[in-house]
Amino acid sequence: MSKKAFRFNKTLLCVLILAAALLLAGCGGSDTSVRAKADETVETALFDFTCDKPRVLDGYSTITTPEGEKLVIFMLTVTNTSDETYDIFKDDFQIQWGKDNFGVALEAVDDVMMPDATTLKPGESYSGWMLVNLPQDTNEFVVAYQEMLEDGSDGDAYFVDLSL
Image (cartoon, rainbow, N blue to C red; front, side, top):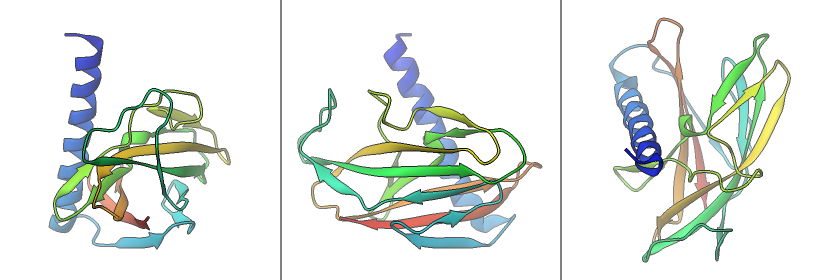
């Protein structure tokens, strides 16, 4: 399997797992969900995160935008508020638009985009660009994060409503 195919399959698996977790959120575990808007800080059990106001780009580095889509960028800032060191994964922040459409941000092509994973010590913050290709007619989307508890059950769900 090629490296590109492996990364695609890994990303697809992460998206499917996150989608299943989000769908099961109403079937047990916590029933709490939190909604926020651009530039509002969302407080989870282990970290805080903020998404700034998104905007459309004509292009970015080597990233190509498929016909009928537009390239959208926003900054994601994550701060570890716990007493432990944790890995933060870009694909844990799912992008949702329309009724049943979802995906994850594009893979980083430079060191200012959010990497696949980053390790944060207590009190540390990291900010990185999140880029996503969305359909041309999409002007609103959501960044979703689902907490997973130590026992494997769902914790709270967090949704940041963003609009262009």
